[in-house]
Amino acid sequence: MEAGAIITLLVFSLIFIGGLTYCFMQVGKCGQWED
Amino acid sequence: MAEVTRERWTSRTTFLFAAIGSAIGLGNVWRFPYLAYDNGGGAFLVAWIIGLLILGIPWLIMEFGMGRMFQKGAPGVFAGVGKKWEWLGWWPSYVAFLIVAYYAVVIAWALRYAVSSFTMEWGTGEAAAGTTADFFFSNILNISSGPTDFGGIVWLTLAMLAIVWAVLFLIMFKGAGVIGKVAVYTVIIPWVLLIALLVRGLTLPGAVEGLNYYLNPDWSALLTGDIWFAAFSQIAFTLSVGMAGMYAYGSFVAKKADINNNAMITGFANNATSFLAGFAVFSTLGFLATSLSVAVPDVAGSGLGLAFITYPAAISMMPAANIIGVLFFLTLFFLGIDSAFFLAHGGVIAPLRDKFGGGLAKWTAGFCVVAFLVGVVFTTQAGLYWLDMIDRAVSFYGLLITGALSCIVIGWFWKPKTLRDHVNATSDIKIGAWWDWVIKLVLPIALIFVVIYGGFMNDIPEAYEGYEVGFLNGSHVLWIVLVVGLILSFILQKVKTRGEGGE
Image (cartoon, rainbow over all chains, first blue to last red; front, top):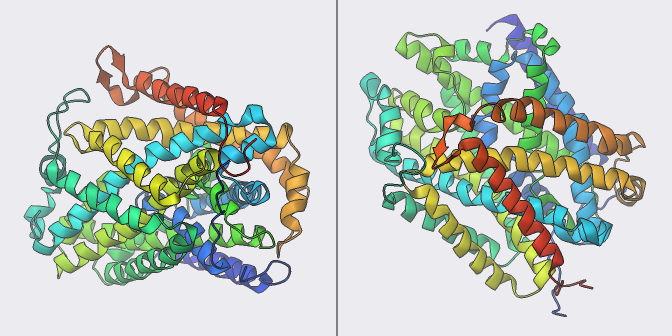
């Protein structure tokens, strides 16, 4: 696999994992998890 | 006034799965990967993430938030903004109705292919790989010479369509409570199937070559208009915003529940699914190119061609082809079905009940029968031509124009700060004043850019796809479909509201 493709794979995997992790870490700060 | 008890999600989990299920659909598999490859690979992903953050998530927050605030579907929301704007809720409902009418036919084709996969009806081996286009156009569609040459109904497709609508009725007739529970499965099952297809794809020869085409960045693409057009349009189409349904889904959310964080989770989960699907698709395309001794660009494609011609060609050359075929087409079925019940229930049935009251089961049954009957036209031998034109009219123009107008009305003729305060009061993550300006300026400008750059500049000077429909051409049909929707929307606005919260 070419270097550019590997970097894209790693960066965007981190963005999605990091983005979703951040969102779930905020759960319960104000809104209710179960309605 | 007929009393109607508002439906509710049974939990935040079910709401999230329903929202994610409505967002992820066939486009995540058959549109996104090709756009990425065709617009600079990794560079496209950058534009696409920017589009998600500055357009997609703010738009989702607006639709969820307005629905929750007014406790209504799209027409009720805009009637709440001002009675004269109610039509702006009905127009996207009309868009949702037409989309689900043909979307169900595409799901029916996927079901037909899943059944055909058991016996590999289109054949196996390299020889069969060259005949999949013929199989699709002749055996599945029995396609005619043009839009006015209807031929006859393709009965097997019609039977599959009836099954699809029967399944949709059973999911929808008890409302949000059941829809949310079903959505948990219709989201998780395609995720599992996509991972299975991904693992299969990655273990095939040539997979890496395909992934290089998918991911390798061409940064110079970021300086062109094409990449931003492609990224913004993909964000607009993939999140199921602009189709009325998200207002209704937001209205089923409890008063104290979160909005902003749910919108962010929905957006990230949708885009992550697209990213994952790209690996399954391009590893398989790499395998197909290697097997046929051609370059990946020679086999890369999108839309119906990718799903029903290219992918079956790749499947025909794999070991255990029938199992992979069933897995792939069931993935399409599950990806499509939750978008379909979102469009039907959130986009049309909930707004009709808001307006006219009445029982959910009766409205659902009536809707399913009418949408099935409208869908019959797409099961004729001319069905693909009409599907293509209606798709262009409503899924492109309808969605983008009504989306831009909605933002303008909410941003300039109402009070976006009121909505921002409303959603911030109960949300885990707060949004700032920047959001008001996204709704007022950024989103309308971006959507109008896509309409002009990708639409009017092509369809005004030339007939859409060169179609001739009697004395009209393809572009005339697009404008007629849109104007009919607009007229119906004004008529519905004039009708007295008899449902909950009527005048």
